[in-house]
Image 1 (cartoon, helix red, strand yellow):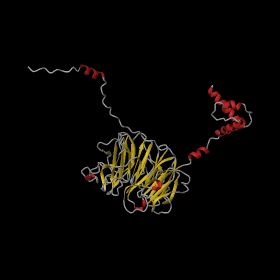
Image 2 (spheres, rainbow, N blue to C red):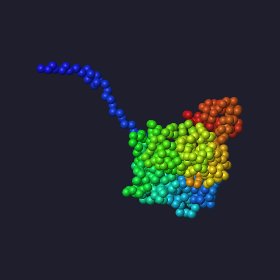
Image 3 (cartoon, one colour):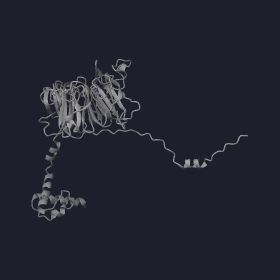
Image 4 (cartoon, helix red, strand yellow):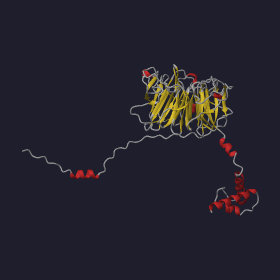
Length: 485
Protein backbone atom coordinates (compact mmCIF):
# COMPACT_ATOMS: atom_id res chain seq x y z
CA UNK A 1 0.00 0.00 0.00
CA UNK A 2 1.54 3.30 -1.01
CA UNK A 3 2.33 5.76 1.72
CA UNK A 4 -0.02 8.66 2.12
CA UNK A 5 1.26 12.05 1.14
CA UNK A 6 1.75 14.25 4.14
CA UNK A 7 -0.32 17.42 3.77
CA UNK A 8 1.20 20.65 4.93
CA UNK A 9 -0.82 22.53 7.50
CA UNK A 10 -1.71 25.79 5.80
CA UNK A 11 -4.20 26.92 8.39
CA UNK A 12 -1.94 29.71 9.59
CA UNK A 13 -1.22 30.87 6.06
CA UNK A 14 -4.94 30.92 5.27
CA UNK A 15 -5.58 32.86 8.44
CA UNK A 16 -2.91 35.41 7.58
CA UNK A 17 -4.36 35.67 4.08
CA UNK A 18 -7.82 36.43 5.38
CA UNK A 19 -6.44 39.02 7.78
CA UNK A 20 -4.86 41.04 4.97
CA UNK A 21 -7.06 43.46 3.05
CA UNK A 22 -8.05 42.23 -0.39
CA UNK A 23 -6.58 44.12 -3.31
CA UNK A 24 -9.22 46.42 -4.65
CA UNK A 25 -9.75 46.40 -8.36
CA UNK A 26 -8.06 49.34 -9.93
CA UNK A 27 -10.71 51.99 -10.36
CA UNK A 28 -11.14 53.09 -13.92
CA UNK A 29 -10.09 56.71 -14.10
CA UNK A 30 -12.57 58.98 -15.80
CA UNK A 31 -10.82 61.44 -18.08
CA UNK A 32 -12.34 64.90 -18.12
CA UNK A 33 -11.34 68.22 -19.66
CA UNK A 34 -12.75 71.52 -18.49
CA UNK A 35 -14.41 74.01 -20.80
CA UNK A 36 -12.04 76.84 -21.74
CA UNK A 37 -12.39 80.33 -20.35
CA UNK A 38 -13.29 83.09 -22.74
CA UNK A 39 -10.47 85.54 -23.38
CA UNK A 40 -10.80 88.55 -21.11
CA UNK A 41 -8.43 91.23 -22.36
CA UNK A 42 -10.45 93.75 -24.33
CA UNK A 43 -8.82 94.93 -27.53
CA UNK A 44 -9.38 96.84 -30.72
CA UNK A 45 -9.85 95.04 -34.06
CA UNK A 46 -7.38 95.97 -36.81
CA UNK A 47 -7.49 94.77 -40.43
CA UNK A 48 -5.28 95.04 -43.49
CA UNK A 49 -5.00 93.53 -46.96
CA UNK A 50 -7.46 93.30 -49.83
CA UNK A 51 -11.18 93.62 -49.15
CA UNK A 52 -13.00 93.14 -52.43
CA UNK A 53 -15.62 90.90 -50.78
CA UNK A 54 -16.04 93.01 -47.63
CA UNK A 55 -13.56 91.01 -45.52
CA UNK A 56 -11.98 94.20 -44.12
CA UNK A 57 -15.26 95.14 -42.45
CA UNK A 58 -14.79 98.82 -43.28
CA UNK A 59 -17.68 99.19 -45.72
CA UNK A 60 -18.18 98.28 -49.35
CA UNK A 61 -16.14 101.23 -50.59
CA UNK A 62 -12.93 100.22 -48.77
CA UNK A 63 -11.12 97.68 -50.94
CA UNK A 64 -7.60 97.88 -49.53
CA UNK A 65 -5.62 98.80 -46.45
CA UNK A 66 -1.82 98.67 -46.52
CA UNK A 67 -1.43 99.10 -42.79
CA UNK A 68 -3.64 97.91 -39.90
CA UNK A 69 -6.86 99.94 -39.89
CA UNK A 70 -9.26 100.19 -36.96
CA UNK A 71 -12.79 98.75 -36.93
CA UNK A 72 -14.70 100.79 -34.35
CA UNK A 73 -18.17 99.24 -34.42
CA UNK A 74 -17.57 96.06 -32.38
CA UNK A 75 -18.04 96.40 -28.59
CA UNK A 76 -15.35 94.91 -26.31
CA UNK A 77 -13.71 92.40 -28.69
CA UNK A 78 -11.51 89.72 -27.08
CA UNK A 79 -10.86 87.22 -29.91
CA UNK A 80 -10.48 87.40 -33.71
CA UNK A 81 -10.29 84.84 -36.50
CA UNK A 82 -9.79 85.18 -40.27
CA UNK A 83 -11.44 82.82 -42.71
CA UNK A 84 -10.64 82.60 -46.42
CA UNK A 85 -12.62 85.74 -47.29
CA UNK A 86 -14.39 86.59 -44.03
CA UNK A 87 -13.73 87.34 -40.37
CA UNK A 88 -15.23 86.48 -36.99
CA UNK A 89 -14.89 88.54 -33.81
CA UNK A 90 -15.81 87.37 -30.30
CA UNK A 91 -16.76 89.91 -27.65
CA UNK A 92 -16.23 89.83 -23.89
CA UNK A 93 -19.86 88.89 -23.19
CA UNK A 94 -19.83 86.01 -25.71
CA UNK A 95 -21.39 87.59 -28.80
CA UNK A 96 -19.99 86.77 -32.26
CA UNK A 97 -19.77 89.32 -35.09
CA UNK A 98 -19.00 88.50 -38.73
CA UNK A 99 -18.18 90.32 -41.95
CA UNK A 100 -16.92 89.44 -45.43
CA UNK A 101 -17.99 87.07 -48.20
CA UNK A 102 -21.32 85.36 -47.56
CA UNK A 103 -21.83 83.51 -50.85
CA UNK A 104 -22.00 80.14 -49.08
CA UNK A 105 -23.25 81.28 -45.68
CA UNK A 106 -19.94 81.79 -43.85
CA UNK A 107 -21.28 84.87 -42.04
CA UNK A 108 -24.15 82.97 -40.41
CA UNK A 109 -26.59 85.86 -40.80
CA UNK A 110 -28.85 87.61 -43.28
CA UNK A 111 -26.99 89.89 -45.69
CA UNK A 112 -29.82 90.59 -48.12
CA UNK A 113 -29.51 94.32 -47.46
CA UNK A 114 -27.01 95.80 -49.89
CA UNK A 115 -23.59 96.32 -48.35
CA UNK A 116 -24.47 94.59 -45.07
CA UNK A 117 -21.82 91.89 -45.50
CA UNK A 118 -19.00 94.47 -45.52
CA UNK A 119 -19.67 95.80 -42.01
CA UNK A 120 -19.64 93.78 -38.75
CA UNK A 121 -23.00 92.51 -37.53
CA UNK A 122 -24.16 90.16 -34.79
CA UNK A 123 -24.86 86.46 -35.42
CA UNK A 124 -27.96 85.05 -33.72
CA UNK A 125 -26.73 82.16 -31.55
CA UNK A 126 -28.65 80.05 -28.98
CA UNK A 127 -26.11 80.92 -26.29
CA UNK A 128 -22.91 82.78 -25.51
CA UNK A 129 -19.71 81.67 -27.22
CA UNK A 130 -16.36 80.81 -25.59
CA UNK A 131 -14.21 80.60 -28.73
CA UNK A 132 -14.42 80.83 -32.52
CA UNK A 133 -12.84 79.31 -35.63
CA UNK A 134 -13.11 79.88 -39.39
CA UNK A 135 -12.07 78.18 -42.63
CA UNK A 136 -12.34 79.11 -46.28
CA UNK A 137 -16.15 79.06 -46.40
CA UNK A 138 -17.25 77.82 -42.99
CA UNK A 139 -17.33 79.17 -39.43
CA UNK A 140 -17.83 77.62 -36.00
CA UNK A 141 -18.04 78.50 -32.33
CA UNK A 142 -18.05 76.69 -29.00
CA UNK A 143 -20.83 77.72 -26.62
CA UNK A 144 -20.74 77.97 -22.84
CA UNK A 145 -22.69 74.73 -22.49
CA UNK A 146 -20.18 72.78 -24.61
CA UNK A 147 -22.22 72.66 -27.82
CA UNK A 148 -20.52 73.34 -31.16
CA UNK A 149 -22.44 75.40 -33.70
CA UNK A 150 -21.27 75.79 -37.29
CA UNK A 151 -22.47 77.45 -40.49
CA UNK A 152 -21.38 77.93 -44.09
CA UNK A 153 -19.93 75.21 -46.30
CA UNK A 154 -16.94 72.94 -46.89
CA UNK A 155 -15.34 72.69 -50.34
CA UNK A 156 -13.27 70.08 -52.19
CA UNK A 157 -11.62 69.89 -55.62
CA UNK A 158 -15.07 69.55 -57.22
CA UNK A 159 -16.46 72.67 -55.56
CA UNK A 160 -19.09 73.17 -52.88
CA UNK A 161 -19.63 70.15 -50.58
CA UNK A 162 -22.18 71.69 -48.24
CA UNK A 163 -21.80 71.79 -44.46
CA UNK A 164 -23.90 68.68 -44.01
CA UNK A 165 -25.35 66.14 -46.41
CA UNK A 166 -28.33 68.52 -46.69
CA UNK A 167 -26.16 71.30 -48.19
CA UNK A 168 -25.01 74.75 -47.08
CA UNK A 169 -26.19 76.17 -43.75
CA UNK A 170 -26.66 79.91 -43.76
CA UNK A 171 -27.46 80.06 -40.04
CA UNK A 172 -25.78 78.23 -37.13
CA UNK A 173 -26.65 74.57 -36.50
CA UNK A 174 -25.68 72.20 -33.69
CA UNK A 175 -23.04 70.03 -35.32
CA UNK A 176 -22.48 67.35 -32.67
CA UNK A 177 -25.69 66.53 -30.82
CA UNK A 178 -25.35 65.03 -27.36
CA UNK A 179 -21.65 65.81 -26.91
CA UNK A 180 -20.04 68.27 -24.51
CA UNK A 181 -17.05 69.79 -26.29
CA UNK A 182 -14.16 71.94 -25.10
CA UNK A 183 -12.14 72.90 -28.19
CA UNK A 184 -12.54 73.51 -31.93
CA UNK A 185 -10.06 74.08 -34.76
CA UNK A 186 -10.74 74.89 -38.41
CA UNK A 187 -8.64 74.03 -41.43
CA UNK A 188 -9.42 75.45 -44.85
CA UNK A 189 -12.22 72.93 -45.39
CA UNK A 190 -12.38 70.72 -42.32
CA UNK A 191 -13.30 71.10 -38.68
CA UNK A 192 -11.76 69.32 -35.69
CA UNK A 193 -13.68 69.03 -32.41
CA UNK A 194 -12.38 67.90 -29.00
CA UNK A 195 -14.86 66.68 -26.36
CA UNK A 196 -14.46 66.95 -22.60
CA UNK A 197 -13.99 63.16 -22.56
CA UNK A 198 -10.82 63.51 -24.67
CA UNK A 199 -12.35 62.25 -27.91
CA UNK A 200 -11.68 63.89 -31.28
CA UNK A 201 -14.28 64.25 -34.04
CA UNK A 202 -13.61 65.48 -37.58
CA UNK A 203 -15.84 66.60 -40.45
CA UNK A 204 -15.38 68.13 -43.90
CA UNK A 205 -13.09 67.55 -46.87
CA UNK A 206 -10.82 64.49 -46.68
CA UNK A 207 -8.92 64.73 -49.97
CA UNK A 208 -5.61 65.54 -48.25
CA UNK A 209 -6.21 63.04 -45.45
CA UNK A 210 -6.95 65.78 -42.91
CA UNK A 211 -9.92 63.95 -41.30
CA UNK A 212 -7.64 61.08 -40.25
CA UNK A 213 -10.42 58.48 -40.47
CA UNK A 214 -11.28 57.99 -44.16
CA UNK A 215 -9.87 55.20 -46.33
CA UNK A 216 -8.04 55.94 -49.58
CA UNK A 217 -10.94 54.81 -51.77
CA UNK A 218 -13.39 57.17 -50.04
CA UNK A 219 -11.46 60.42 -49.49
CA UNK A 220 -13.04 62.02 -52.57
CA UNK A 221 -16.57 61.14 -51.52
CA UNK A 222 -17.04 58.94 -54.57
CA UNK A 223 -17.53 55.64 -52.78
CA UNK A 224 -20.75 53.77 -52.12
CA UNK A 225 -21.71 56.09 -49.28
CA UNK A 226 -20.83 59.25 -51.18
CA UNK A 227 -20.05 62.24 -48.97
CA UNK A 228 -22.14 60.97 -46.06
CA UNK A 229 -19.11 59.83 -44.02
CA UNK A 230 -17.30 63.09 -44.72
CA UNK A 231 -20.12 65.46 -43.76
CA UNK A 232 -21.17 63.65 -40.60
CA UNK A 233 -18.84 64.33 -37.64
CA UNK A 234 -17.28 61.03 -36.60
CA UNK A 235 -14.61 60.01 -34.13
CA UNK A 236 -10.97 59.85 -35.12
CA UNK A 237 -9.65 56.76 -33.32
CA UNK A 238 -6.00 55.88 -32.74
CA UNK A 239 -5.51 52.43 -31.21
CA UNK A 240 -3.84 52.33 -27.81
CA UNK A 241 -3.65 56.13 -27.65
CA UNK A 242 -4.50 58.00 -24.46
CA UNK A 243 -7.41 60.44 -24.44
CA UNK A 244 -6.51 63.66 -26.24
CA UNK A 245 -6.08 67.01 -24.50
CA UNK A 246 -5.34 69.48 -27.32
CA UNK A 247 -6.02 69.93 -31.05
CA UNK A 248 -4.71 72.20 -33.81
CA UNK A 249 -5.56 72.52 -37.50
CA UNK A 250 -3.68 74.13 -40.38
CA UNK A 251 -5.17 74.51 -43.87
CA UNK A 252 -4.85 70.80 -44.73
CA UNK A 253 -3.44 69.17 -41.60
CA UNK A 254 -4.63 68.09 -38.17
CA UNK A 255 -2.51 67.77 -35.02
CA UNK A 256 -3.59 66.00 -31.79
CA UNK A 257 -1.86 65.82 -28.41
CA UNK A 258 -2.32 62.86 -26.08
CA UNK A 259 -2.84 63.41 -22.39
CA UNK A 260 -0.26 61.94 -19.97
CA UNK A 261 2.30 61.07 -22.68
CA UNK A 262 2.01 64.44 -24.51
CA UNK A 263 2.70 62.59 -27.76
CA UNK A 264 1.61 64.63 -30.78
CA UNK A 265 0.00 62.86 -33.73
CA UNK A 266 -0.33 64.40 -37.18
CA UNK A 267 -2.35 63.66 -40.30
CA UNK A 268 -3.03 65.36 -43.64
CA UNK A 269 -1.07 66.98 -46.45
CA UNK A 270 2.68 66.37 -46.27
CA UNK A 271 3.98 67.34 -49.72
CA UNK A 272 6.34 69.91 -48.16
CA UNK A 273 6.92 68.00 -44.88
CA UNK A 274 4.45 70.30 -43.13
CA UNK A 275 3.46 67.47 -40.75
CA UNK A 276 6.90 67.80 -39.12
CA UNK A 277 7.56 64.13 -39.80
CA UNK A 278 10.13 62.44 -42.03
CA UNK A 279 7.55 60.17 -43.68
CA UNK A 280 7.90 60.21 -47.46
CA UNK A 281 4.28 60.65 -48.46
CA UNK A 282 2.44 63.52 -50.10
CA UNK A 283 -0.54 62.94 -47.86
CA UNK A 284 -1.01 60.92 -44.71
CA UNK A 285 -4.44 59.31 -44.16
CA UNK A 286 -3.82 57.64 -40.79
CA UNK A 287 -2.32 59.71 -37.92
CA UNK A 288 1.42 59.27 -37.43
CA UNK A 289 3.39 59.87 -34.23
CA UNK A 290 5.68 62.91 -34.48
CA UNK A 291 8.76 63.88 -32.47
CA UNK A 292 7.23 67.20 -31.44
CA UNK A 293 7.64 67.96 -27.72
CA UNK A 294 6.76 70.74 -25.27
CA UNK A 295 4.36 72.29 -27.78
CA UNK A 296 2.35 75.34 -26.78
CA UNK A 297 0.77 76.17 -30.14
CA UNK A 298 0.75 75.00 -33.77
CA UNK A 299 -0.34 77.19 -36.69
CA UNK A 300 0.00 76.78 -40.42
CA UNK A 301 -0.96 77.91 -43.88
CA UNK A 302 -1.35 76.20 -47.20
CA UNK A 303 2.10 74.56 -47.31
CA UNK A 304 3.94 75.48 -44.11
CA UNK A 305 3.70 75.00 -40.36
CA UNK A 306 4.83 77.06 -37.36
CA UNK A 307 5.44 75.43 -33.98
CA UNK A 308 5.68 77.44 -30.74
CA UNK A 309 7.17 75.57 -27.79
CA UNK A 310 6.94 76.16 -24.05
CA UNK A 311 10.32 77.88 -24.06
CA UNK A 312 8.80 80.60 -26.31
CA UNK A 313 10.84 79.47 -29.32
CA UNK A 314 9.29 79.57 -32.80
CA UNK A 315 10.11 76.91 -35.42
CA UNK A 316 9.13 76.67 -39.09
CA UNK A 317 8.92 73.81 -41.57
CA UNK A 318 7.62 73.39 -45.12
CA UNK A 319 7.64 75.32 -48.36
CA UNK A 320 9.98 78.35 -48.39
CA UNK A 321 8.50 80.32 -51.32
CA UNK A 322 7.73 84.02 -50.69
CA UNK A 323 9.59 83.85 -47.36
CA UNK A 324 6.68 82.36 -45.42
CA UNK A 325 9.07 80.39 -43.16
CA UNK A 326 10.91 83.48 -41.96
CA UNK A 327 14.33 81.81 -42.17
CA UNK A 328 15.84 83.92 -44.95
CA UNK A 329 16.42 83.36 -48.66
CA UNK A 330 15.96 79.59 -48.78
CA UNK A 331 15.25 77.81 -52.07
CA UNK A 332 14.86 74.18 -51.00
CA UNK A 333 12.05 72.68 -48.93
CA UNK A 334 12.79 72.94 -45.20
CA UNK A 335 12.16 69.35 -44.13
CA UNK A 336 13.08 69.73 -40.45
CA UNK A 337 11.90 72.16 -37.83
CA UNK A 338 14.11 75.22 -38.12
CA UNK A 339 14.25 77.96 -35.46
CA UNK A 340 13.44 81.52 -36.46
CA UNK A 341 16.41 83.23 -34.81
CA UNK A 342 14.90 86.71 -34.49
CA UNK A 343 12.07 85.30 -32.36
CA UNK A 344 14.03 82.81 -30.27
CA UNK A 345 12.92 82.69 -26.63
CA UNK A 346 10.52 85.61 -26.78
CA UNK A 347 7.47 84.47 -28.78
CA UNK A 348 4.07 84.20 -27.08
CA UNK A 349 1.71 83.69 -30.05
CA UNK A 350 1.91 82.55 -33.69
CA UNK A 351 -0.57 82.81 -36.55
CA UNK A 352 -0.63 82.18 -40.30
CA UNK A 353 -2.28 83.13 -43.55
CA UNK A 354 -2.05 80.95 -46.65
CA UNK A 355 1.49 82.07 -47.51
CA UNK A 356 2.41 84.41 -44.66
CA UNK A 357 3.10 84.22 -40.95
CA UNK A 358 2.79 86.28 -37.77
CA UNK A 359 4.28 86.23 -34.29
CA UNK A 360 3.73 88.27 -31.15
CA UNK A 361 6.61 88.66 -28.71
CA UNK A 362 6.84 89.15 -24.96
CA UNK A 363 7.11 92.93 -25.36
CA UNK A 364 3.80 92.99 -27.25
CA UNK A 365 5.25 93.63 -30.71
CA UNK A 366 3.77 92.07 -33.84
CA UNK A 367 6.07 90.56 -36.47
CA UNK A 368 5.02 89.43 -39.95
CA UNK A 369 6.76 87.77 -42.89
CA UNK A 370 5.99 85.96 -46.15
CA UNK A 371 3.92 86.99 -49.16
CA UNK A 372 3.15 90.69 -49.11
CA UNK A 373 1.47 91.26 -52.48
CA UNK A 374 -2.00 91.63 -50.93
CA UNK A 375 -0.69 93.84 -48.09
CA UNK A 376 -1.49 91.08 -45.58
CA UNK A 377 1.74 91.78 -43.73
CA UNK A 378 0.58 95.24 -42.71
CA UNK A 379 3.95 96.90 -43.35
CA UNK A 380 2.74 99.13 -46.17
CA UNK A 381 4.99 98.29 -49.11
CA UNK A 382 3.51 95.11 -50.65
CA UNK A 383 6.89 93.37 -50.83
CA UNK A 384 7.58 89.82 -49.68
CA UNK A 385 9.50 89.58 -46.41
CA UNK A 386 11.97 86.73 -46.01
CA UNK A 387 12.48 87.35 -42.30
CA UNK A 388 10.24 88.75 -39.52
CA UNK A 389 9.64 92.51 -39.61
CA UNK A 390 7.89 94.65 -37.01
CA UNK A 391 4.38 95.83 -37.91
CA UNK A 392 4.08 99.45 -36.88
CA UNK A 393 1.32 102.01 -37.44
CA UNK A 394 -0.56 104.70 -35.56
CA UNK A 395 -3.01 102.03 -34.36
CA UNK A 396 -0.29 99.80 -32.92
CA UNK A 397 2.09 102.43 -31.57
CA UNK A 398 2.87 101.99 -27.86
CA UNK A 399 0.24 99.22 -27.56
CA UNK A 400 0.50 95.50 -26.93
CA UNK A 401 -0.62 93.20 -29.72
CA UNK A 402 -2.75 90.25 -28.59
CA UNK A 403 -3.68 88.10 -31.62
CA UNK A 404 -3.06 87.77 -35.36
CA UNK A 405 -4.84 85.69 -37.99
CA UNK A 406 -4.52 85.58 -41.78
CA UNK A 407 -7.01 84.68 -44.48
CA UNK A 408 -6.69 84.33 -48.23
CA UNK A 409 -5.93 87.99 -48.99
CA UNK A 410 -6.45 89.79 -45.68
CA UNK A 411 -5.43 89.74 -42.04
CA UNK A 412 -7.10 90.61 -38.76
CA UNK A 413 -5.34 91.59 -35.53
CA UNK A 414 -6.32 92.33 -31.95
CA UNK A 415 -4.45 95.11 -30.17
CA UNK A 416 -4.93 95.95 -26.51
CA UNK A 417 -7.32 98.87 -26.11
CA UNK A 418 -7.19 101.89 -23.83
CA UNK A 419 -10.19 100.74 -21.80
CA UNK A 420 -8.25 100.67 -18.53
CA UNK A 421 -6.97 104.21 -19.02
CA UNK A 422 -10.44 105.44 -19.91
CA UNK A 423 -11.88 103.81 -16.82
CA UNK A 424 -9.34 105.60 -14.65
CA UNK A 425 -10.10 108.92 -16.30
CA UNK A 426 -13.86 108.43 -15.89
CA UNK A 427 -13.88 107.93 -12.11
CA UNK A 428 -17.24 109.17 -10.77
CA UNK A 429 -17.02 112.70 -9.41
CA UNK A 430 -18.31 111.62 -5.98
CA UNK A 431 -15.17 109.53 -5.44
CA UNK A 432 -12.67 112.25 -6.31
CA UNK A 433 -13.33 114.50 -3.24
CA UNK A 434 -12.87 111.46 -1.04
CA UNK A 435 -9.40 110.84 -2.41
CA UNK A 436 -8.59 114.54 -2.19
CA UNK A 437 -9.86 114.63 1.39
CA UNK A 438 -7.59 111.84 2.45
CA UNK A 439 -4.63 113.62 0.92
CA UNK A 440 -5.60 116.81 2.73
CA UNK A 441 -5.92 114.87 5.97
CA UNK A 442 -2.46 113.42 5.50
CA UNK A 443 -0.98 116.89 4.99
CA UNK A 444 -2.69 118.44 8.01
CA UNK A 445 -2.07 115.64 10.48
CA UNK A 446 1.17 114.19 9.17
CA UNK A 447 -0.47 110.77 9.54
CA UNK A 448 -0.32 108.06 6.91
CA UNK A 449 -4.07 107.72 6.47
CA UNK A 450 -5.56 105.25 4.02
CA UNK A 451 -9.08 105.79 2.77
CA UNK A 452 -10.13 102.46 4.29
CA UNK A 453 -8.03 102.76 7.48
CA UNK A 454 -9.94 102.00 10.71
CA UNK A 455 -8.01 104.78 12.52
CA UNK A 456 -8.97 107.40 9.94
CA UNK A 457 -11.84 108.78 12.04
CA UNK A 458 -9.68 109.30 15.09
CA UNK A 459 -6.97 111.04 13.12
CA UNK A 460 -9.44 113.27 11.30
CA UNK A 461 -11.23 114.31 14.51
CA UNK A 462 -8.03 116.05 15.65
CA UNK A 463 -8.17 118.33 12.64
CA UNK A 464 -9.95 121.68 12.42
CA UNK A 465 -13.02 121.43 10.21
CA UNK A 466 -11.74 123.69 7.48
CA UNK A 467 -12.14 123.07 3.79
CA UNK A 468 -14.50 120.83 1.84
CA UNK A 469 -11.91 118.09 1.63
CA UNK A 470 -11.66 117.65 5.38
CA UNK A 471 -15.44 117.78 5.77
CA UNK A 472 -15.74 115.00 3.22
CA UNK A 473 -13.31 112.85 5.17
CA UNK A 474 -15.21 113.44 8.43
CA UNK A 475 -18.46 112.54 6.74
CA UNK A 476 -16.95 109.32 5.37
CA UNK A 477 -15.57 108.40 8.77
CA UNK A 478 -18.94 109.03 10.42
CA UNK A 479 -20.67 106.71 7.92
CA UNK A 480 -18.17 103.98 8.67
CA UNK A 481 -18.82 104.35 12.35
CA UNK A 482 -22.56 103.84 11.83
CA UNK A 483 -21.93 100.73 9.72
CA UNK A 484 -19.76 99.22 12.46
CA UNK A 485 -22.39 99.88 15.09
